[in-house]
Image (cartoon, rainbow, N blue to C red; front, top):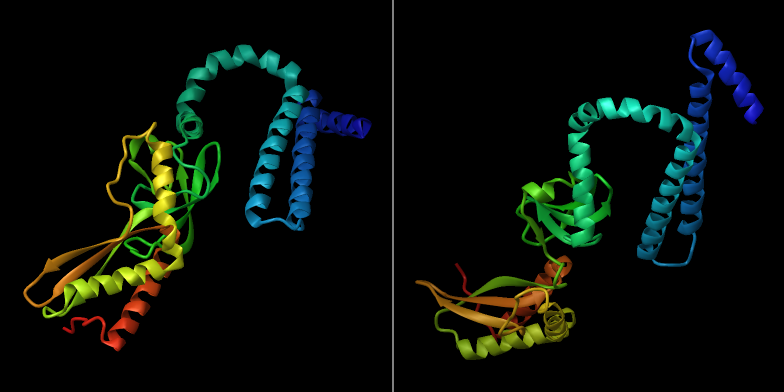
Length: 292
């Protein structure tokens, strides 16, 4: 194999007037990259058939991909080591020009190191940056990708679009992380009832609805444990973690604001369940909904 590469390099070099050493090294580099790409493909196919969760498959495949990429670069450096030494002098003269030309790439690379070191966000976190909200689905040395949530979508549902964001944006734009300290956020919905409603009984009915939803039952206790865990790092505290209903009187009706903790990815499902149960109580005559 090496003899064939040697002969081919000599032939190309003689015809193009290029040093055959560089042609040989270029061919070897291409072969190394192809070898590792094929290896990654084979491993990905093997992992796709394993009887484990998609989450485990993804993280295992990501670790292997990173490891093989590192090994690939090590092999390429070994292949080019003699030429790298001879190029060091030339590089020292053009390094300033290269730095200017690759400023954004370098900036993004170090921003990526900062993101990983400070854990600003991780894969599966829900974040908002540059006015774009979404779930982080992959992270690279120069950027990361998010599964977008529709702009102005109060139900926190995905559009199915993948957005690429350069790492350097974390230095120039505020970054909201919805799941870094806690897995749950406060959601609030409004229910309008008639002015002559028995507010105490109406609130009790709605509290019973909230307490009957399995998705919400254990969240206050889980949230309390999470608050205890992060108080060393963050100055965060809550006086009340269980659902609460606030009352507001308007000219025509009474506005009840339901505030409760929920996982950001389950907001719409929970709201749907609450509204359906409110409608059931309305039909039973336990809640007098306001009709415009």
